[in-house]
Structure formats: C-alpha cells, structure tokens
Length: 628
Image 1 (cartoon, rainbow, N blue to C red):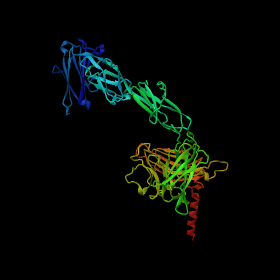
Image 2: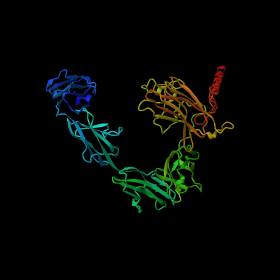
Image 3: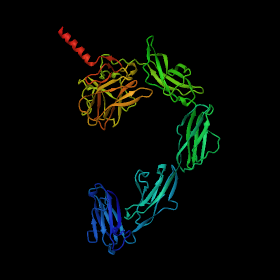
Image 4: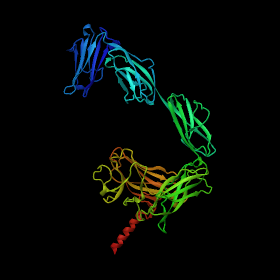
C-alpha cells in the first residue's frame, strides 16, 4: 500500500471549477495497493467519523473514478460543510501503517491553478551532451498540483523511457541531452492532489544543437591515373542547418582552394596522378561543431578473390610432393589501371619458399573470369600460406592470403554402396555448411541421449535396426526458433556426363527418407546449389510441420545447368519438440521412377547397378548355395 492521492471535484454538472455554496462537491481518495479490494477507507470531518446522510454520501468504490477509489460527496454545500476532511486508508494484516490525507475546504483554501512559462522559456537551446532544465510554473492555485511532462508527438517517449514524468516544482531536468530528445514538450497540471478540473497546459520547444551528420558514400575510391576524381561529402542533417565552414585536407595538410559555397554540397574534383594518391578529409562545420568525411583515394588495384571450390591437390607419385591449382577472380578490374600480372608468394612457417611474378601475357582480367596458376613441389603433409597481389603499370595491390594443405582424394562411397545411409563417419562426403547457425548430427539408437525429448525424432534409422545411423537436427536448447542447419552433398560435375540426345542438360533423381515427428516441427527444405562464379541456391522440395511418426520417402527430378550440390536445410520450429531427420540419400542419373532409382551415379561420383539387380544377384547366389 503506497502513494495516497486525493482529488477535489467541483459540481461537474454545472461545469464549475470553484467551490460555491449551494453546489455539489466531491472529495476522492485513492491508494495504490495489491489487492485493491482489501483496502479500507475511513472519512473524518474535523476529526469526527463521517456517516452517510442526506448531505454527505460515502462511496466505497466510485464508479466515476479509477478502480479502488473512495469518494465523499457533499450535496448542496452549506456553510456548515466548510471544514477539514480527512481520508484514512489501511490494509488489514499489512505491515504498512495507515495512510492519511487532510483537505481543508473553504472558499479561500481552494482555487484553480494557473500555468506560466518563464520569460524566454518557450524555446530552449542546448548543445548535444549538455544539461538543461525545462521550467513550467504554477503561479496561482490552491492546492498546487504536480506538473506532468510528456512529448507532444505521441510516439516519442521521455528520456526515462516512460510516456510521462511527474515533477512537484514544474522543473524537468534533462541530463546528457542527445539529438533524439529534440522536439516539443508538453507540461500540464495533474488531475490529482488538487482540483479535478480541465487540465492547464503549455508547451516548450527543445532544440538540440549537434555537428553535421555526414555521408561520404564509398570511402574507398579507386581510379585510373590521369582521370578526374570527384569526392562528395553529403550532409544528411545538422542543427543549426546553416554551415559556416568547409575545408578539404590531403594527408593531413589543408588543400588551398577558394572558399566553397556553404549552401552547396561539399565536393572536391581533381585529376588523379601518382603524386596525389592518399587520404582525403572533408571537415564540415556548423555552430555546434565539426564533422569529417574520410576518403582513401588511390590507383591501387582491388584485391584478388580466391575461388575456394578448387579440386583437391594433385599428388605426384614420385616422392612425397603435390601440386595445387590456385584459382581466383579479380575484383572490379576495370576500376584502375590495366592489371599486367600478379605477385605470388608462398610461405611455410613465415619463411618464403616461392616468390615470383605471374605474367598475364597481355591478357587483361575480366570481371568474374576465373584465373589460375599451378604451384608445384609442395610437400605432404605441410600446409602453406599463399599470398597473391595484382600488379599495374604504376602500383601493386595489397596481398590476399589463404592456407592450402594436402588431403587425400575422396574415394567414398564404394561401388557397392547404392545409397548414403550415413553409416560411415565420413558421411559419404557430405559436409556442414559454415554459414549456418548449427550443425546436423549423426546418430543411431545406441548413441541417443537417454534424456532426449520423447515426443520427437526417430527411434531408429530407416532400416529399423539399432545400429543404423541417420542425420538429424536437435531442437532443444540452445536452439531458438528459425535457427538453420545445412548439410551439403559432395560437388557433382555435370560436364562429365552427357544428357539425352537433343538435350543440353542431364536429368538427375534425388531420393531420400525423412522423419518429421513432433508438435513443434519447423521446416525441411532441399536446395539445389549450382556452382559458378557465384553459387545460386534454389528450393526444389520443402515440408513443414508434423508429418507423422514414420519415415517417409521423397524423390524429385533436377536438371542442373552446371556443377551442383544438394543442400538439406533444417529449420528449428517454435519449441523443443521439433527434431527432423534424414536417411538413405541417393542422387542418380536419369529421371525418378516410382519403384526404383535408375542407373545410379552415387554420392561422390561412383557408379553401381540398380538396387533391384543387386537383390536379384544376391538371391541367385543364395539359391545356388542351397542347391549344392
């Protein structure tokens, strides 16, 4: 129980704002409490308890006021009703003592309030980061009510984060003022602790002065030598809006030039040459301060960008050596002077083992064009840092760096494996996408967490054996709704396979089993990722929500336009009962058939007989042994 407040309401039926004889008057009393209905209110007149009568009416809960408000109505006020009235609130069983308020009612003790702003207080200016007081005074009125402050724009909050702030003396103190605090503020009398009449209000405009906010656009400016370069520094906003100075600097020294027009956009034009590359600054000033736009201007070429889908290093049988085909593209080769070659630097333990220039022999790099260079005589199992920098007639770009290391060529699955059941730890060459939020997990019945959620996820793999493995996403903590896990198939090179006669693309059949049991199941998407200079993903199959307790089979056709991967994307649902699993994945040449999968190109590129032929062959061998 806390915060006892009172209200004095003159005869509202006659729009009265003062106490008048022969008119009605209501005194109200409210205390914040939990629960509200446990509060007891007692009224006193000149110290004596008040009881209901024709002229004094007690309301335990006033329907015209906030819930839990007690009122005392004085009907047709007489001189005998001028007195001191007391409202006492208590809460049986509470540790809080009773709360009391005394209100002296006379024609001289109660009068409407009058608000006023100090001279010059309608508009207040302050520098950003400074302190300021907004002042709104009650110059007349008894009793003097508190002053409530709020923003005039309804969607804006006060600095405290609340919609209103109460001040007893009408002084709103603002500290460390920021630009988002600028705007109109409303001060108004509170309806409590005084007369409950039409609110008196006034407005104060707060202006926050701050330096210009600038946008340099692209701060990294590249150009060919002996061409015109234009640097623009856009003023997004500032207060005051009037600029008083614009100055340009190169490498920290002022550029001597005529005084720019402060009403125009700050701009600098010059012809780039090998002597004036460097850092440029535009310093824009208003009366509140100075802000800076920074540019780095050069004819230096952009970095090379490595292509990370390069095939595995090639092992040379003679000795313990291997070679590596380094591939890269050149970012925006047209932006600067013609690139005539590259410096390549190969280091082991920060010691150079190779440093030479790659001559392009007059062929200019094109945007998106894949460049390559073979690095030979590298030792197994050492790793190397490869650094590459473009060269122009006038300058050399910065080095781009990557690490290369030899790994054995991928040979799984074996020709006898028709589908990928994830039985081997190498999971048939599938890999986790590094750009997702979490990973798929390999598991079987024996390795399941005994404390896992009981109403989601499969008990066994698709074969029904406890030893069989499958891949699944775990929806329990710390996973949250919308988290994604992506599992990538090996890369298929379609250029090594011919399509049907007259067709430019080879059809493939993608088949797999999925398990989506649980009331919080999210989505399982299958994406086709076609490899080129930039990888493009497209959704080719999708399911969402609970799909029943059993494994279900899915299959569909694709006709990729280039080297491709299949991506299994699991998306976590709204809560923990959302595990999704996949098993027995196959990617085969030819269109899908209802009963079986035709002429298989296995995960990883191996070939095998269709499953029906293997079963027929095995059954024949078994019967032959029985016959013998």
